[in-house]
Length: 276
Ligand code: AMP
Ligand code: MN
Ligand code: MN
Ligand code: MN
Image 1: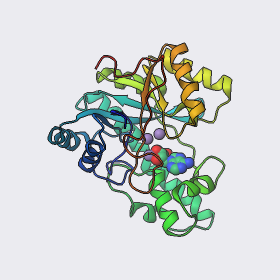
Image 2: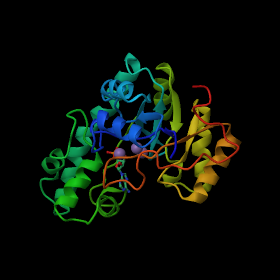
Image 3: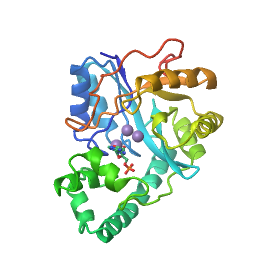
């Protein structure tokens, strides 16, 4: 079992377990350095840090920031941030502020596709009044039998080109990285294998991320194949970026990797925790 799990979600964003339940689960599974990285949020970190002290594990304070780059959405993981930093808090609030309006537009689009009342339906799955995400819509659409699983719902309804997808403008890459650095943290490009770009676009993306001050990339992620573990280890080396790993766990029954379900980082990379 991996000692480091640096990407996960609680009920403060779109996960199914509370911050303290996530910490307890991480500890029970042998994780020694656990990062809670709720989407565009740090509100769970207080509860998580109390739980981590009780469980004698290290909480790595984190978040996963939504970013727009060249017409696509990227996710940037913040690690070892000061959650009390005012500029970061304001930046995260500005990202979250767009979510409600996007959700209303998604519901309108779904209604046009013959699925009424999706906003109210998604709200029943929302667990923090501060944040609504596509995952909450997905759970509602599974409940209303539009597809068999959350994964399936995304494919059919919630990704670009599908009826419930709405374009949205998040933070810029330099903004996100500056907020993270301003709060004393490290910026890690999440699941780089997931973005819909070709090989040249991926190199441009990782180059832009590094040039904007990005510190590392997620090498090990459930979004990656074994071949991509090797591929992104190579990118980390050639772009001079640190390597990170995280299960992206969202809760029982919804995630392919549980907390700590990660192999060792490939040889030849410098881990993001090398100076912790
Ligand atoms: P949002 O930030 O509201 O756009 O929602 C993004 C979240 O939706 C991600 O963090 C995942 O939890 C979930 N998600 C995105 N794509 C998929 C997918 N293909 N299958 C399952 N969940 C997904
Ligand atoms: Mn999520
Ligand atoms: Mn993500
Ligand atoms: Mn995530």
